Image (cartoon, rainbow, N blue to C red; front, side, top):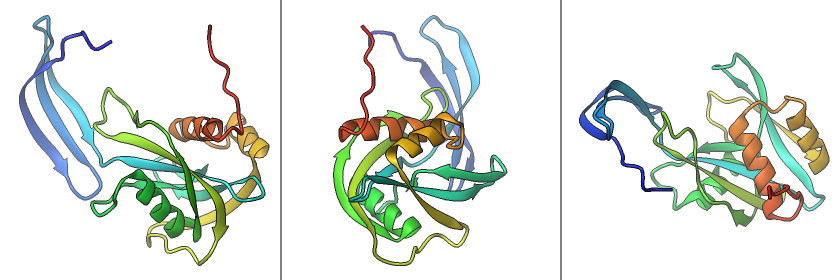
Length: 190
């Protein structure tokens, strides 16, 4: 991988730019000379998912309303990296505390993944936090109403299999986060 030539960007303009999102339109030319315009790219800051596990081997999930889908969703604690955050681990601990009132110890940081390499510029970081315990009331954003839900690892996986956890990115974070700490074995091809 890596030897395919990239597209050339002839021009770039931002159509929307605010604190949540930036949408840009690029006018591009492929290596074979094909023009592609406009090509839309969503620019976000990097995101972090937290696979939070307590001393009883339970996973901390959160329930919250998601307006894009128009329903309450079951998810991992998560958020975006803020300018003052010193890396994904700091973001994970901040988001865990803000959303759930919990604290813990960083046990693993997985390699970053692209959220969608075709249209998004940002990366997703998965952080596993062990020894998670509730230490305070959540301090979530005023637009967030979040309910904590503890469940055994097997139950969390069953919720994922049954479609009750709906974010495909979060499913990947849950599976590979559990694998990183030896709570799940992912079969390898070949």
